[in-house]
Image 1 (cartoon, one colour):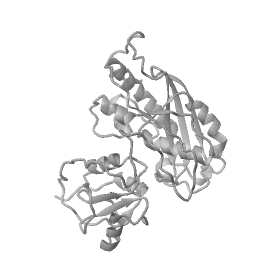
Image 2: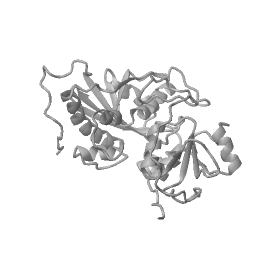
Image 3: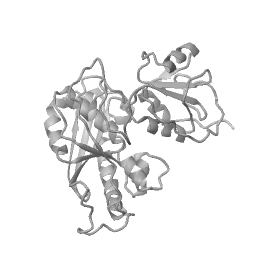
Image 4: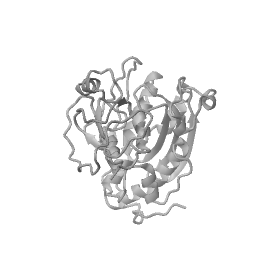
Length: 328
């Protein structure tokens, strides 16, 4: 039973007229986080204007490549071998999204993955707006310890049954979104809606950037963005990361190039884990995170010169799940 910790739902006459008429709560599991990774499962919960569930849908997708981090999503080659290809489910998927606002936790990532799959299939997803539940929780000033889905779920008393399973993650998010939506309506909070611009062409050799409006979720590779002042890391630097070993609190981590997950969110997660997020790379840097180690950016060049270890975004995400405490 979902514990509703929000204020009572607004009456029909008080419901904000500017709010959307329907939502598609989406979760996709993927082979990784980079631009050439593929969707391997997808789930959609369709909600009405007030967040009530209308129906739900789930499918596996054969990515025609290695399934990636099986230890996270549990989907092996054997499981996916007889699954439909994305073009085979694209029409049904689109029907579930049509005319609705796409809702997801870190929505820019889910939207990018979906848009790329439709571009590969020489089609477009019928999505014009998205809403990120991370941004909504910030707008509501919810007292969450971090931006993880499990924290949002726990706040509203939603029980997770199978984390990183698309259908259960979508269910959990749908159940957490409804009280969030009611709280926003009761407080006359403007929903953080953002435009979705579909890809119109695709090349596997050069991953195109999806156009995004300025504001939450916008990130352009190699573009200037204001530095965010972060609290000083309270832990001493234990040195460089060693392959096969866990990260340790106090390690200095730098990022270079485009990322699938928003850069600020990645940096927030690193800070929450007790790491030192560095804006530049030096001989003291413990690790460089980049999806394009051959890009030739100044950080990549310095990493080569200094012998700084380099991992991609997907590997870094796994390392964040098990960071060792600092020595004091």
